[in-house]
Image (cartoon, rainbow, N blue to C red):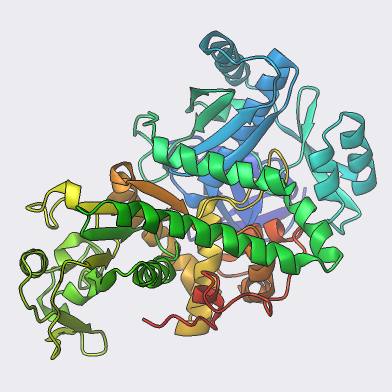
Length: 550
């Protein structure tokens, strides 16, 4: 029998030609705390059943890796959808993702009680205990479309029309076939960790482990403001008759996208105007606090708020927390021995509290301004002072932190949490996660404005997400409103900018598989030109041409 050399964890080892990744993984299972879910050959993600036929680099991933966690999520979605079908003979729609959970709707005419949901969970557990194989089968794309039409899954049949491949990979659990834009686990027995919470009205939350801390309890903390944002987004999509990317693709293909851009912008501007109307009616509110994760559009939203306040005769005073950064050479060092960049320790909290308190007390104040080129704080030469018709607009990732202006009562504050929710599903089972939405925005912005490659942004993204989980998302519960900053059409526009950047990631790059994952998601989205996008759009913050300047 011919042999091949596999390089694993920096060392070469000889195996028989045609050995599967699964058989190889058995030799390394003790190196992983959790089940190995998937492997890679020369940085390309492959199911564990893949046969290896030539010398190559091999790696494996479990729940504690980003790639492995993504595989786990998709496998869990398939398991949940299969169990719903088994118990209720109906489908499920995965609508939004946020904070290690997926907001779903069970598409049944009957009310889903806690008892029924428990039956679904027990069905999932039985599949896990039985260890059912998740089979990958290759079929022609036309046959797959015909199959999904026959079983009345028209959403999936329509989405597959926009894939040019002659054959595609379907996955099967028993008699249930499904299509996902990613690799799935080898077996249901690996999907041990999950929770499901009933929200009422056939809405449920499917929870999966956090790859930063897999041991963390899977507990859902209800956030009414976030659910309101979800439901508002779903309502306006239903009103427009655009429920999936396929619906938008048809509009773009017919060159009718101009009105979609204008309608999307009107809807978002109206949301901001409604906030301003609400705030302006409350004479106690003197401080608007804006926060949100990376690439959520904080700059544009704060600028628009300012203009709308002016239109109401209110004088906005914009304040960026970045200007209260302490000097770089005075900062504590992070775990890599470099000056801290993200945590609250980089902000001169005492100075911030002093300046804001003085402003509220109608004192004339000289505000600091951080010089990013020199890495140090400077003092503005022009003082500012609040009057009876003034309002402070404070923007920054730490603006909700209780260490800031805790001496000022909450009745004087209005807190806005920005988050771009998934603009459109691909089909009922495949969605663009909100984190992917923001990642795409950031890749484009970093390249245009910071000359940063897609690979470098992908490499840094894991640290960005970890920071968000620690210092931003925990404060979402304190928001007066969660504002959805995604736009219906944005992925179609971003495709024209990001696709080439993703293809620039080389096969030997550690971020290659993540780039391929994003490329595959964009395969079924028809590109849209950006000419008609207004200069005050939030998308201009990322693609350029914005009328708002920092």
